[in-house]
Image (cartoon, rainbow, N blue to C red; front, top):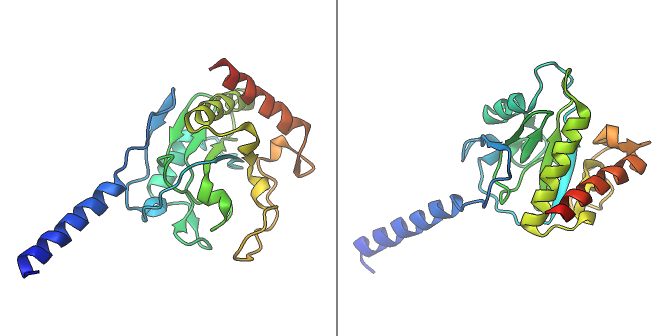
Length: 213
């Protein structure tokens, strides 16, 4: 193989590699504002494909008046939320929901950093954060989250028992043996730090929306 042939092969490989980064993520959920972290930056600085089989529900625990879904989109886009102990150095999840809007930050076929370092939560789940900012209507936020979750379940054929709280992943055995600590998240849906009646009521609402689709 001569030099020109080698050069041509390298260029073709580079082109194919760059194309793989731009794989379309599929349809956008209704009512969602797509405002992605820049490709190649911060929580997306490496392309890490994912086939979602779980949905992980979080709460932001950000109680500031301005801590709505838009604000979290901006923080993720400018790299403000660091993840010093994970492999990529930044925190990243897929959707943030408040009482009047939903923002999408990452494609649903890319891995985030929101659940459990290099564990199955990050490797296999779509992360949804629910806002808690002052003035936010929690009941409406829960309802919008349930609708979004039901849509994602249908889109990716995810069963209801694969919709889990962040707390779920802290109970799973991890290969790297890192101590994930205790995370009572989403705290307002947990009962004494565990899924109970409030979590089951939330799942029932998701199931009702899923059946209606």
